[in-house]
Image (cartoon, rainbow, N blue to C red; front, side, top):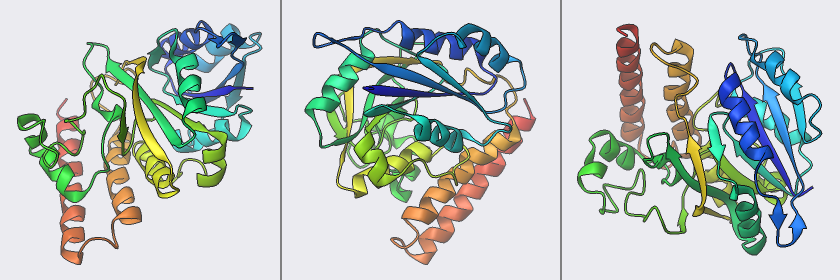
Amino acid sequence: MDLSVIIVNYNTYEYTKNCIESVLNADDDLNGERLEFEVILVDNASKDGSIEWLEKEYNDEPKVLIIKNDENLGFSAANNIGLQEAQGTYLLLLNSDTVIEPDALVKTIGFMDNHPECGALGACVRLADGTLDHACKRSFPTPSSSLFHMLKLDKAFPGNRTFGAYDMTWVDEDATAEIDCTTGAYMCVSREVYEKTGGLDEDYFMYGEDIDWCYRIKQDGYKVVYYPEIRVTHFKKGSWTGKRNPKVLDAFYDSMQIFYDKHYLNKYSAATSAMVRSGTKMLKSAAAFRNERK
């Protein structure tokens, strides 16, 4: 098996179906040989009937394995369940609200085969309006880069490596580049990397797990690469509109603190750590207030 594609579904039937269809209909000519791949669909206890509809669609599809969780275990844990079942030489995390271009899979495998130093490969991920999803090429969120991003200095000075560090705005979006981290919406790793580094950290219920994984992959001596020849459309925020679930908002801001405490707490002064904690709490409170007013 060349490739295992792991997709997590939670109340997103239409998006998930479109995602799976884009994978099943992808080109499978890999240098004259057929690309062997599987799709592992992990449902996180959807409550909208989506998994029942998806079962009707794909129970007879030999390339699709469906796993149903009894409760919502979070994005990290659900992906880990899929990774544990995967048989592929390469493992691809793919968000349910994405659609891949037909040549995405063969280009992914081709690049990974030719670049064993690559621990994690990301794609050029564009939003539905055609703009770049900046999460597909970014640096690790240090206190300074996060501050400059919050102050929008990266937008004011996109070519500046200091102010634009958060989203690596100086990196040409049409050029292959070594980066710090890419988005879990489309991230491919080899089985070797997975077995050495381990899976996603389940302390992250959702958000931040992709950054953490890339951090650990780089610590293990591999490169993280942005490869724009692979093209993906991300219907970001497709799974929610209007007021957001407060638990989702909490998870977003909690992930910031989890990452800092895990990787940066011993690298910065107590004063800096106190400011980070205070700032994260303020952002979380402000987001909750805005959410309640929707």
